[in-house]
Image 1: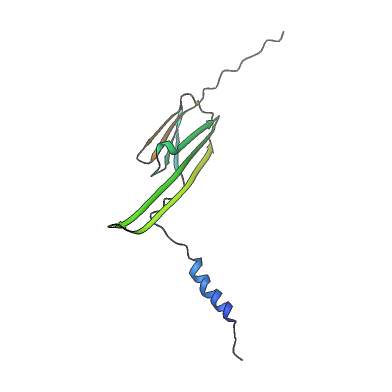
Image 2 (image 1 turned 45 degrees about the vertical axis):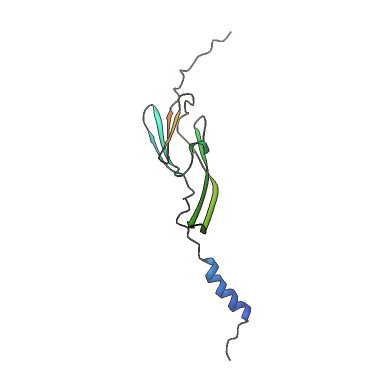
Length: 137
């Protein structure tokens, strides 16, 4: 006896193979912050790759030893042939990353620069104050 499958199941199987494959968009940015963190005796240096973002859309906050970086990514692209639009793409998103360092940061002396898609943070270590002994009255 032949194995008969309902037409709905065959149609579902056909569509599964079509829709399961991810659509690749090579011009879409990688929505991650890739970072390098280096340390010396006096400071931490952070390099974060954030290409295609305006420096006004990058935000850095420091709270003790916690550093947070976030950026708004906005990109619109039209591919035209003469006056005819062949393709129009836009994507918006936000990326962020937070991490703790081994020592608190002197946020008053911290410095940030953004050049060629790379954010560079110079984060001086806060000098520990000497222990103070209280006099009991």
